[in-house]
Length: 72
Image 1 (cartoon, one colour):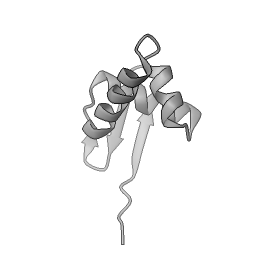
Image 2 (image 1 turned 120 degrees about the horizontal axis):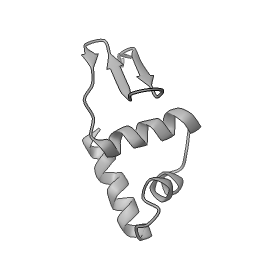
Image 3 (image 1 turned 90 degrees about the horizontal axis):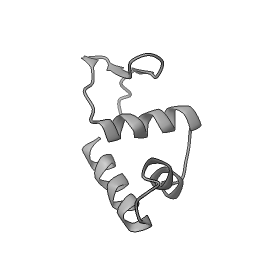
């Protein structure tokens, strides 16, 4: 059985992710990733990587996404 922890994501004004334990600190890339998913909903890895790192090569963008997901 898994436990769901209620959380709230605020995108207007200052970015803020709150969980049952209070505010959650995130790096800039993690904030951008959560904001994109929060606004668009379910998105493929290719779209996420290309949107968040548009000037990077496809391989570098995928690696950056993988690293950001790992940090989350």
